[in-house]
Image (cartoon, rainbow, N blue to C red; front, side, top):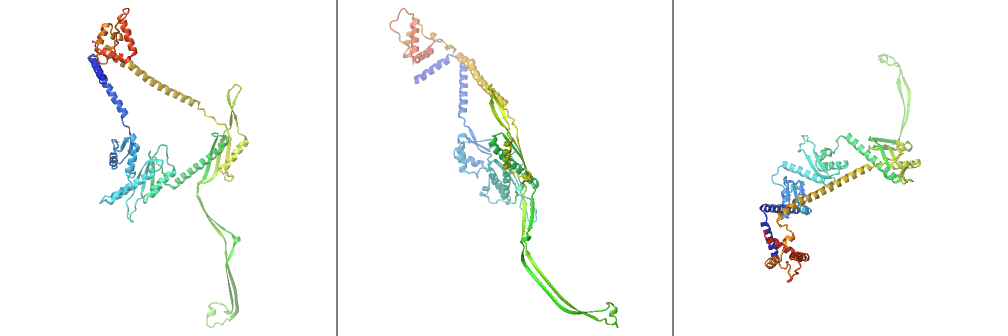
Length: 549
């Protein structure tokens, strides 16, 4: 092995000495370029891909995370802002398990009530109030982030300072900003739930004073006006009822006429009024005597009354007595009081808004289409409309599905019309053209790249190699010994040349005089070359080294 390496070194030295100064510089530059390219390729292949471990880490929690990573010998990177931590992609999940197990979710991200676990001596009441507000905000953020649709959130509380009983305090308020996952949205119930969550978690905070916004700045909460809020809820209720009835109608008819052959639209009129009434009903036929009281008065007596002309004359002195008149006075009086128990029914009736006043349904049904093959072999379609009997059956099904009521004035209209089939031929043709262009562009790109590499090899690499080794581009005939003397000279130095042992042919003691020396040697050497290529290549290499310049 050492001899082979030494032989290669000797050959390279001889080859390098035989080059001109310009060619030597070209070889050195080519070697440098090859080394640089090798280093770049190896760096790209061995470069570590980093993935995000934590994002938006608070500055007061960043040292804690970095310390845990260093303790577990996990390589990491920090961005310029210091809020983003990256680890190698193949260590991402293990790093997350380590951080979560050793620190826990309460120590990373938003600070909650654990802020009060470490209290400093001498903290003022104002600092305590601010810390309490920060802790409540952190706890609310964690609760809101637990929703499936919410990616991250931010809660800001506006808590006024406590006032004395003589001072009028300001009401507390809160703002919530939510960023949703792509393709997700919050419905009205979820928004109401967020408001109630915040309002119930903070003292003296009403849910009406909580404003919810999305990450685009759109207000998701409605106005606190009761009338507008009720109107919006009524409109949403109407849309839900209509959608439910449409799905019910289409689902039952599609089983009969086929999928995509029925369209139903429902208009529902809801009662927007709230009704509160009291009814009192009396049944006179079911009365009963509860109590009866009888009172009798009887009076028998006699008395007299003066007679004459009343006035001043009868009272003057000397006036004559007019006399008296006597009469009997008998009184009989009876009073009976009877109390009856009368059954009375009192009803307190309250009807909420949203009752169905009228339902209007419009249904469009497609006919039957049959494929018919003509005599010429062409395929044609024959349209057959629905019969009147079928329409009546469909109408009966729809009425039963929606709870049809003639007293409300409900109407159901079913029409049979042929649906216009959507033609996707042009779209498919355009899609095929785009795919073909994409394929042609890709083939052209790779063909151009291959052609460029081929031209670079034939125009640059190959001429350069020929230019470097032009002094060694001799033919086999030029390198082979032409006479017996030259062959004997090579055989005489066979033992002195490394790798030449057994590479040269052994001459026979007697030669055919009819054959020419050059033809004999050529035939002999070519036969050896064809039988043992390894030895022949070693011999040629040594001949090139020992060849006189």
